[in-house]
Image 1 (tube, helix red, strand yellow):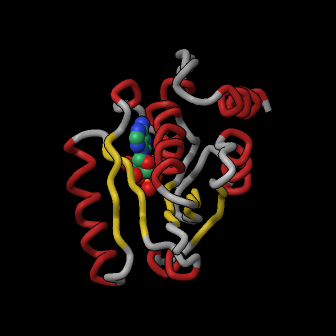
Image 2 (image 1 turned 180 degrees about the horizontal axis):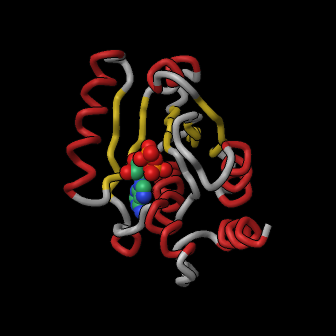
Image 3 (image 1 turned 30 degrees about the horizontal axis):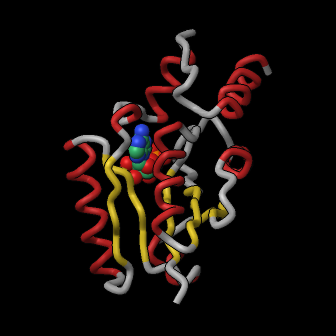
Length: 159
Ligand code: ADP
């Protein structure tokens, strides 16, 4: 049986913390689908298409692919025949929300298991929100997001 995992998120934009979780997941599972959430409520920095492209350019492992989903994550997992949802945990503050989601998802779909990976120490304070905030105020984010992502962010502010 192919062990297939889904790593869902907003990825607006993808950070080194996300990339680390993708790399480690790719070692644990036969296939990893990085799934960008299509969320119409938020005011994102990048469109879903731009985020998908960024992840494709950077997460170049042969068993990793990128997709998008709207609606219930567990429905997407079943559709993709994935048995596992991967989430990253940075701090205690992530835990409460992630536990709620994992338990709700289990109730909705007991066949899909949520697996948590602890954030890499070096990136455990990183969030897309903080990256955007520092970047917009002119601070350096070098080394905190992939080169490719940093370039796209610079183009955004210039354009
Ligand atoms: P969401 O809106 O679903 O939280 P994010 O793109 O912010 O989407 O995060 C996707 C997943 O990656 C979440 O499980 C989050 O906890 C995890 N994550 C975010 N930043 C990091 C990081 N620096 N290190 C490890 N995991 C992270």
